[in-house]
Length: 402
Image 1: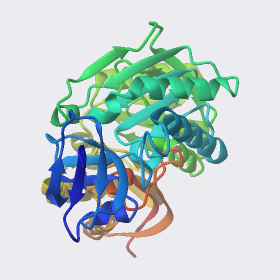
Image 2: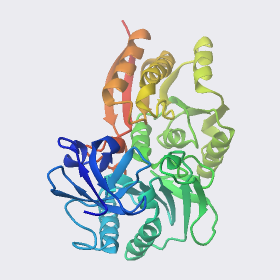
Image 3: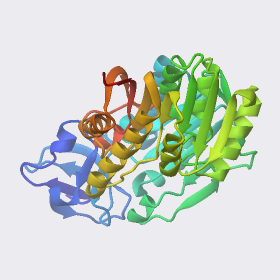
């Protein structure tokens, strides 16, 4: 059949278990008389129809599935499918989380592969990473606006942050800017009772890390009357939650001048500045200096950027996670707490656990697990879609060996 692909016998294990990706080495036959980014029919080796997906012969991910056992144009129209996917995503989030600011569309986990849409109050930020879905982003945005309007939520502006390098692998140029009318890109949001200015234009990713919402709340509950060190503070989100939870004092550290400036601004916005200090420094340099000075904290928070974005660099990343956690543990008073995380899906639960355990051994500390958490429910994990599960988060009590 025209515009179709057929899998090799024994391949397609990922999509048959619920995933959405078909890789180039899983395909036996391609009969493509269409353009990259268009929809194709996908068949198993024996001719069984599996669904429709976007084709891109220039990508290692050859097909990203959009339907399963439904043929677009025959069983359902494309507009009907998009409307259904968006409505389902919104109804799910209304059930599981505070929707004032949340990740509204999470790519594969919402069965719209390659697109992310974050809602910051009345503003949407869009990140499109795959060729096929990029062609549909206008339809998806309009479906989101219509769905929210049905709940009397009016979106005043949309901004695109499709500036990730991974777009180049799809044959797409990096893109950033307004979709529609211009507006003030400094957006005020409230999360866990804490106010933030989110810079959706210059901030990292889409401007703010919504995935840690409830992890920040969990940390705030152990900070009452404590002296806290927040490493890789970015715009101060964990630090501000610590103060909001009653911390006696918080030191917030980040290598970025812009991040620290934004963190200071957020502290003033909440009236927390008297309980906070801000330091521009590389955390890997700062922690040993504090140790040499004999400095101790009751709570240390580690929220670093991903140390690995490929399987090839996982070994070095494990060393990095071990080193940073070892340095942090040495600064924690006996019986204090460490909140530590990894945001790379290549750093598995087991690998991260082993890195932290090795750090405790070398620091001569005993650790007790208080909580193990992952990303917030607005970033749902689609089982058998490895890329949707990335955030591992521990709260640990750190005790001296006696």
